Image (cartoon, rainbow, N blue to C red):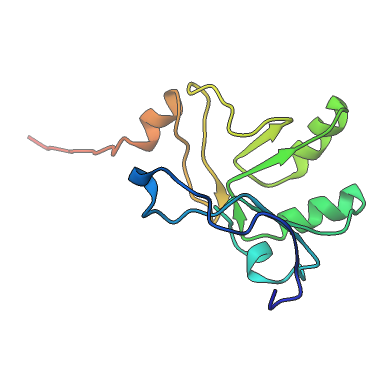
Length: 140
């Protein structure tokens, strides 16, 4: 790849049924060797791709995650629930999934932080988010 990455798996266009064939589809993709300051790491990535950096110490991983301008969501995969709680508390995102992805109760708040948006949707949090309060003062 142009930026020095090594493709591990994916990267192509999946075969889709005829009714979906005209879409912009990308296979789930993993690559290694990509410099951390490249666009795939530095911007919010809403594609099924994973630039996999070398394994690091926990504090360095958290610092790297928080250095991103975006903060919609993250996943933590671990067999240590105490560690998951400690890491989730320190990562600056709107939602953290532990040992899962895209699993949530629609009554709970959902929304990003930093440049991934403001406000929360879901449950009573949506009422305030979608309400435009107005004040009319009249002196008679």
